[in-house]
Image (cartoon, rainbow, N blue to C red; front, side, top):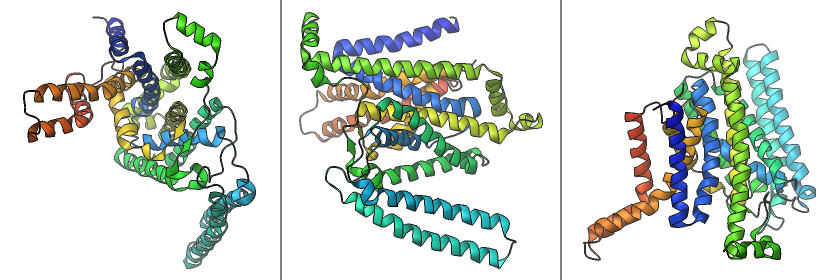
Length: 434
């Protein structure tokens, strides 16, 4: 079987699985799987840029996804009335003062001669700067969070169209990647992994606890969407008549229409990013990145700036992940900081890359769609398996209760089994790198 025929068959298999899901469980679920699968495929492409092209082990995917979600709030939510005059400008002034304090400490470190005086001067600047920063910052935050704390209590956003927030999410993630890369990319791969994981947890902690910025664990709801609202479609008589002509009621038709509109948008973004990633892969730059990945010492001996190129690819991959994070928050219409868990937004994305094929953009897309379908469908399949196995047992029997309770954990078991099987029989993934 030729590689083209095999790869086409694999994508065809995913299409058949989704069509089967629509026929058996309803097209509402099938379209939901498609939407989240497309977003997951974009996340997998971002990780594949870093790992497949450059061998960078980033296990802080969750933090970049969260920054993309935060961008939708900062860009698209309306500004909360009165917050800027109450404390917003004070918070901005505090942040600028904090940055100036850090810059001052760096300048002292560079310009003063080594010795006790230099250490004391830097310590004095940092301690004094910290206390002044907290004095300015805390008062501003308290004033912002006191304004209608039950429903808002945060600055809000700029009220711009939500589609603008998607590239801005990429910019925020790229900025965080630059900071991480400047400090951690010189480290060994295992230290880089630890650094990215730790910084991603810091990002999540900030989003959870800084209520003035993102409402923290109180969540931001009703984030604007780029497609029509179901209730507006149901109020449109022309849409209702057309839906009834196709055999659908207005509620079902409006739900399917909205999800299809989201799928179209996500597919366009995926195709654009795929085209750009393929152009990069087949360019001299892409060949250089793979040469650095395969032998850093030889590439450096040929005059290549290994650390600089690693920083480039780390920023690009993180930007793609940030765009996907903004898309996911847009689809959910809410920012829920507690939902950002390493299992979903780091481990599962890595499974998609490994199963699909590291170093191959089409493999990342296949892995994203296939693994997300499995992630969703394994739970009902697990319930069916446990119900079948325990059917002969009497109600109330301890083993029956235990097995039925364990059905909820079939997802984790299944992902582990799938990963082991792929690593054993197709260690380079379903669509390996050429």
